[in-house]
Image 1 (cartoon, one colour):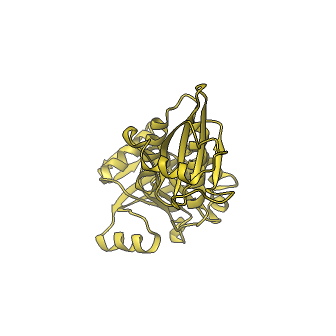
Image 2: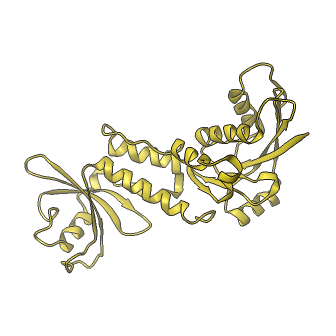
Image 3: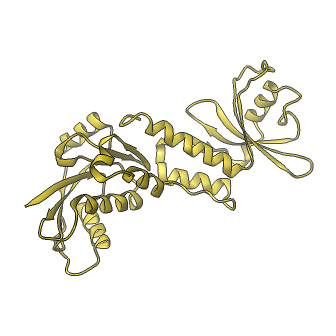
Length: 271
């Protein structure tokens, strides 16, 4: 008796996925029977290429770009637990691949979609894999920000992990004192700490008018704040533009990333 499980994902070729399985199961015996099949006595995994029509269906139904199905057959004679084994594979796929991933237990509705680094779950994921499984995957996939990371390094990590769906970008140095800073100072009152001093625009959000600004004071101290610009071109009434203060650029970036992930996770399987 066996349990069939499937993971749908985007990959350049079936042989790439088979090679990944060999890395996940380096112990002997293992055997690659061809470029699409792997067997190690515990599991028999095979890769199927989707037809163009199926690829289109997956995109229309779930909004994912997938073109391969990686199926696992677990043998009851082995000492492995099928759910644990599948979770092991999923964790490594999440860590090692930067692509859409969709899992459908026994052909039912999908319980997880990964889109360029964002993990989306529904209520069935923990029910199938055990309590805390989704939190474990989220923690594994989280970007860890340290005090010694530059703002450029942080943005590069975000772009690598989240891809084109990440809606914040970093302004080039030659534009950090340009129009955005001028607009900010037009909207601020004289009592605002960013009204005077040297101010730079660092990050901008394409989803709204939020921007991360840095102010360098005369004594060398730095202030960091996200403002929601109104583009009124004049001083705003009290309480506007809205602002969020941070102790450092790294803390501001951490807030930006957490907000981005939470907003995407909160809508289930829809981005």
